[in-house]
Structure formats: C-alpha cells, structure tokens
Image (cartoon, rainbow, N blue to C red; front, side):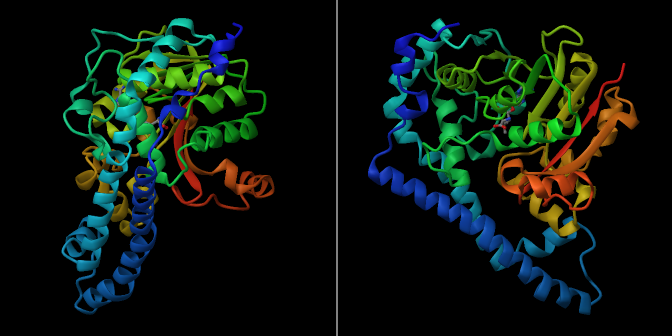
Length: 399
Ligand SMILES: C[S@@+](CC[C@H](N)C(=O)[O-])C[C@H]1O[C@@H](n2cnc3c(N)ncnc32)[C@H](O)[C@@H]1O
C-alpha cells in the first residue's frame, strides 16, 4: 500500500515525547544511578562475598551450598542492602521520570495512533478485543515496578503505557530517547537462524508477548517476504507499537490475544519467537504457551524463546543474583520459572527431545562476524547472558 504524503510528514509517535531540560537531566541521573547499582555495586558485592563473606564462613565450616543459603547470608549484609536499595529505587524512578512528558504529549499521541490505525499506511493491522480478559497475573501488581505496566488504560484509545514502558525502558538501559536501536534480541536470534539454517524462509512469524513489537520488527528485515504477527494482552502497548511500525513503513499485524490460547489456525506459523516473556507468567501459563506453540507451528517450523538462563546453567552465586527480581522487582514467577529445565518443558509441550535445544548465542551487533564464525565452529563460547550473550531455548517441529 502506498504511504500518504501526510503520513510521511507527521512525526513518529516517539518524537512527541519532549522532556524539558530538567526532566531530561533527571532521566540521565536515574540511568546513571541504575548503571552504578547494576554494574559497579553488583561487582563490588560479588567481590565482597568471594573475598570476605564466603572465606569467613568456610573457616567455620559453614560455607553456603545453595543460592538460598547465599541469599540468607547476604540479605542483612550492609553492602548488599545498599546495592539492593539503590537498584530498587532506580528501577522505580526509570518509569516515574518519563511520566510528566508523556502526560503532556498524550492527547497528540492518541490522535496520531488513531489516525494511523484508521489508515494503516504500511499495510499492517491492529486488532483489539474490547471483551478481552486480562490475566490476573498481569494486572494484580505493577510488574517491573512500572505503574500500570502494559495494560492500564485511563482514557479512550489510551497509548500512555506504550510510551511509559518504551521510554522508561530507555532510561533503564541508558539509551538516548531518540536514538533508534533495533531490538537487539530479535536481531541476534535472526542472525543465528540465518547462519545455522541457511535457506530457512518463514512465511509467517509470530512474536508472543510482543509489547510494542521492538523485538519483532527486526525479523521483517531479516525475512522481508514474511508476514509478521505480534500478540500481547495490553491494548495500550499494541496501539503504540502499531503506530511506530506504520510510521516506519513496516507491515506488522498486531492483535490482543492471550498466548496461552490464540485464535490462529493449527500449523499457521513457520517461526514463533518471544523475548523476556515466559519468566513473567505462572508456570501453568508457560506450559499452556508452549503447547500452543506446538499447535501453531507448521511441520519444519521453529520456536525460539530468549529467556533467563535456567538455574542449572549458572553458578549458585549467579542464581542468587538473578533471583533478586522475584521479591524486589514484582516478578513473582521468576525463581520458579528458572528452576525448570527448558528442554523438559519443550518435551512436555509435545516436541521431540532430539528436536529441542538450549544455548547462549552472541549478541549479533557487538560480537563481529569473524568471532561469530569461530563461535559457530565451537571454537569460541558466547559471552554470558546479559553481558554480550543471550540465552535461548526452543525446538523444531518435525511432523
Ligand atoms: C517483558 S515484556 C516483553 C518485552 C518484549 N517481548 C520485548 O522484547 O521488548 C512481557 C510482555 O508479555 C506480555 N504478556 C504477559 N502474559 C501474556 C499472555 N498470556 N499472552 C500474551 N502476552 C502476554 C505482557 O503484556 C508484556 O507486554
């Protein structure tokens, strides 16, 4: 479909976010505070544990054996408490710091999203369901400490949470608000698929828990002939994502659906992906989602989820670090999810054990082609998850 001249001239919905000088300064401060907590203090806490706490306990014959033992010892520790307090507060402030500028821009953002949803200049679609039942696990608490997370709506055609989660996320990762960055996870998974499965050309791709589609759009660049679908429970984030994609000229089909049971026909997709999704839902829902993936995949299709590394893939100390979010970041299913074996979950969902995989892949943008070739030959490991690598698991559907 040809784009209208006025669509090209209108700003991207993201450009309506115009923080004042002071708001921008606050956002920069919060980014730096969070970085200080998650990088510098995290490393200092680890050094303190390894060089002082653990040796002292070892000398008394009481060295912690499991991550829960480490947690018991470290929770009252003053350095750990400082780290934990700063990290919690910085996380909360990421979202709070972007709210005033979004409130000012909201009427314009809503108008723009409405207009693009009416005209669909890029040929994508937005399908919302006014009767949709939001699962309790999504609205009973502010996931990630983001007020309203992805589902709260306070006015008609509300897009505010799309902006709050998007810009709050940029403060969280320390990105400039207007710097366009592709979804690095999708980019990395697409890169890996292209190099390990040359000739794989999915006709239809589905991203589960897509939010505003950040980690869906790069699949359209990697597989331009494909039809891309993204589903989520949150109407505001889907409206926002649709407005972004349409303005970028990328045809994506967004729909408000529960990934535990969708309305797509059997075998409809050749590639099903997700990122940062499964650890946020109860285990029963994760099992339903994986069974749904099995139903939706065509023969020869591929499912790839980027997720937190499971507990058995990392050290007890790293489990202590990763599981912090369970109690401190409103992500109550985190520990339970990580205690599962992803390969076993795939098998329970109907995939053959021989067709399931789990591994850490390099971040495509930062690793470089030469090192990537060595990674593929098994000569070089990928960096750890979250530090230059991404943990993925999934399966192929044979028959
Ligand atoms: C952390 S966000 C995912 C971020 C996104 N995939 C990305 O990479 O930018 C988790 C998303 O999963 C969605 N979600 C949670 N439960 C869901 C379900 N049962 N069906 C569909 N989406 C769900 C949430 O609404 C939220 O947008």
